[in-house]
Image (cartoon, rainbow, N blue to C red; front, side, top):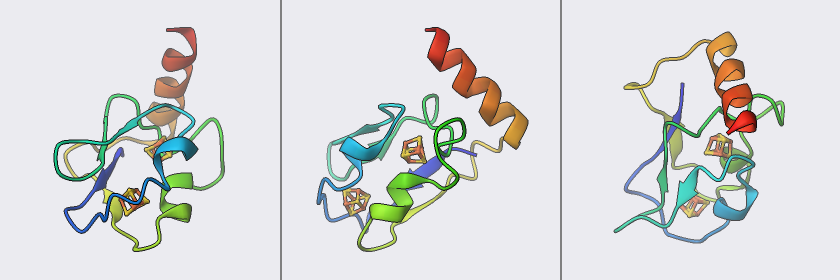
Length: 82
Ligand code: SF4
Ligand code: SF4
């Protein structure tokens, strides 16, 4: 499941440089995650690094993009080949 940044985001920029998939952008109002690039860090880390660094815990699972661990790993592999 891709992750989602809620409107509580304070645009602190802690998460953006930490994303191994370049899935995070500044966005119009708050930072945003591209669901086509977010693998929940599967393939890189044991935990979602953006969640680990966010000081206000405003990054949540995106219910619109349900994915299994296997699908996330396949997405990781696709992104590596692109
Ligand atoms: S969970 Fe990982 S891949 Fe997804 S946006 Fe956060 S840092 Fe990037
Ligand atoms: S770390 Fe959290 S508060 Fe900071 S920009 Fe990212 S989502 Fe927003």
